[in-house]
Amino acid sequence: MESTSRRPELFEYPYPRSLVLPEIQDKDHAWARANPETWMYYVDPKVDKSALQHANVMGGRLADDKGGFADYWLNPEFVPTPEYAGVELTTEFEQVLWRTNSGFNNIGNLIEAFSRSRLTVVLPVDDPEGLRGWPLRREGDSWWLDVYTSAGKLPRDVNPWLRREVSGTDVLEQVCPVEQTKVNINPDSEPGVTLFGEDLAHWWAEWREAERRYRAEQSGEQ
Image 1 (spheres, one colour):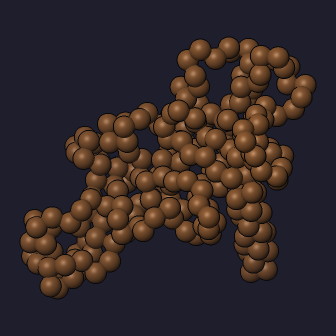
Image 2 (cartoon, helix red, strand yellow):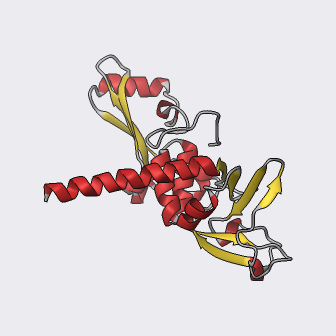
Image 3 (spheres, helix red, strand yellow):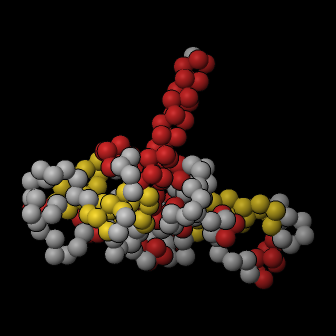
């Protein structure tokens, strides 16, 4: 997932969800003909089949009565094995980021998880106390902030004394509103993505407004 000229909405996904599940094979059509109006589920091919859980299910397709599929479902809580993901996902936000990059989660899922996450930034050598504030670096016309989702995503040679833990909410509210900022999540590591601060700030404002309306509606019903 990467920023584009058109800002996606909270409910949108990086690309068509119909492309996320494994490609339909001839054997799947045969199964559909034999099992009309039945869901065919896909699980992580690397998982231990003797201990399946909901988190191992990728999603499913609903067979029609002609050997095809009429609908599909993606599990928004799918947790891939390291072998399937190609990377160790050690935090909840890393799981959400991977799912968003892979098409299982939408922008709203990403921004909500980002706001609750604890991230790490690396201070400059000439400002080890962080007296200058956020460690933004200038590249071209943009101000960049590198953030890391866990210790394993940090550069191997980073000085541990320069690490600072920050909240995702602080990044959203203090850094992203600054003009021409970009937030680089896990540079040179996976899962990662670079997003415009303007987009993140916009999504965060939309999310908070949606939460406010939801709570107001819930209070009105009680």
